[in-house]
Image (cartoon, rainbow, N blue to C red; front, side, top):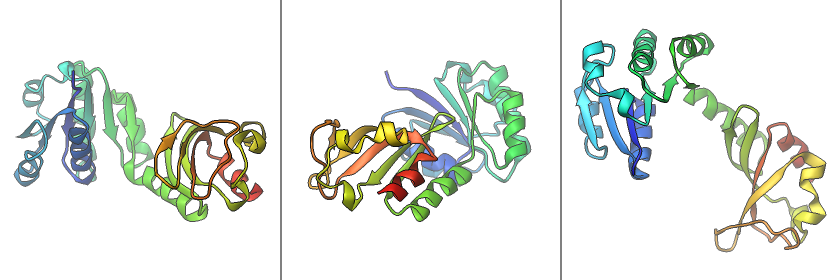
Length: 219
């Protein structure tokens, strides 16, 4: 059964999220006060409505307690609205609430009023993009929990022809290789300890963020 997800706020973040979730087969109910954004989203989400999500009666009609996830994606235009919406979603029994924050204070308040998870898309993108600028071998980077990152890195020239057993990445850097993207085909492969790495391969690793510079400097 497809996940049922409520998205409140169709700014750049909310619209992008609604599109991506719809592409993955989720049933997305998207709402915003702006008619033009609702009309845009209606072409790809399950249902799109024009409404004020800070109105308790209107929000209650969406039955957030029956949705798998409720996302309050209200942007910079109104921190107050995002706080009220988050509090109402929690009051109405939404099982998992993800709210967008603009700064540290906003994040703390959203947690206090009931958000189960708070995200700051601009801040998170900035951190990931900084890693790609500083470490030229980083292809993609994504937080995984509070302390860990999933990172895709290009193998360095000194790694070509060596096996994962020879490189001993877990022991030396605390890095766990979870997949290999084969350079010649682009296929994702399960890592094999004794198979030599090939030119153009990428490693998908799980590690603490501090392991990336150490790994880059060593090789």
